[in-house]
Length: 212
Image 1 (cartoon, rainbow, N blue to C red):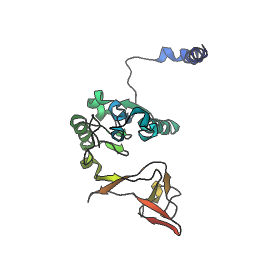
Image 2: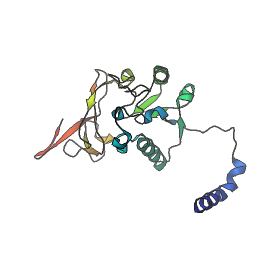
Image 3: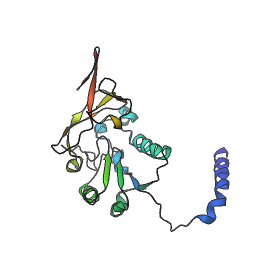
Image 4: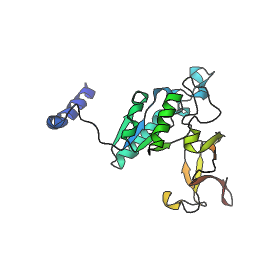
């Protein structure tokens, strides 16, 4: 009853705006966040009992939530797209793939077309590394788009990124001596010849910090 009461209060506040709403209107957004149900499959769970699975290993919802929260905090209008709307990608300027591990060839080709048409892709972690059955590929399906190839994952659940020379403005307050700290396992990649590298993993040492 308390929950329904809260919803009732929220909708009462929104009632005054209903006359301005148009069910045929389109959201004006330059940014799209790709949500993919198949990415809930975690290949590290293969062969394990349900009782042996640690929920934090997947974290797909957390990645999506963090991206959306960041966009909201910075007042950036965004839309959410799924694999049912791949033909709509060219409506946007930026497509965010928050650890979208599972992608198939059709979806990857649509993303390539989006990039070739001038769109920008921001992808994190193991995006496109698996198929829909959770089988891990040898390399990212979108390696040609990313400009990097998959080499593995770090064992530690703490990662550090140090900006490359001339890239400090992208990482305010961070440097090789004071790298950016991330609570996640690093994805180890090899950059292609044409890749523009802005940061590298850093290793902490007793005497300071050195690039790893």
